[in-house]
Image (tube, rainbow, N blue to C red; front, side):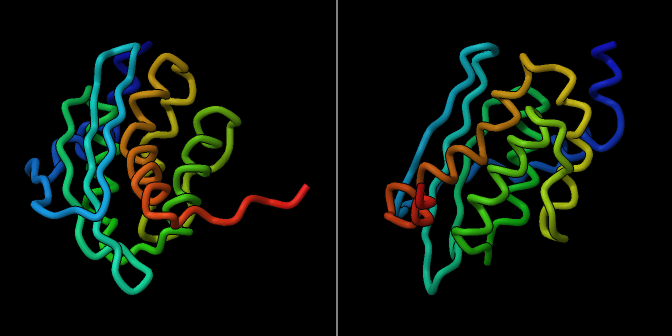
Length: 149
């Protein structure tokens, strides 16, 4: 039942989302939107010395999109680009491939979003913030090198 989806830590994470704050002078910005529900997340990044130094975000999203955005917003400062790409990939694998939640202490709250895997129509909104962050990193030329074939 879909009401079960919103049990546990999902609503707590969504409620803990920091107030919307955009950066005045970001190095990169990106906006992602879910065509299914209309949720949008816009993020701004500043990366210094190999880690996220400043983060701004405005999330106009459903509870699942807000929960994921909240977890990222509260834990992103100090994260290295490689760790953020890994987060996106692990989150996608958790939702689409029955993988474990994203690894590491910084991202442990994503375990609350494991039940979303049973609702494919909700995957896009759950991925918005992670995808927007990685779009910013791409714009900054910080993508990890492509794997050799």
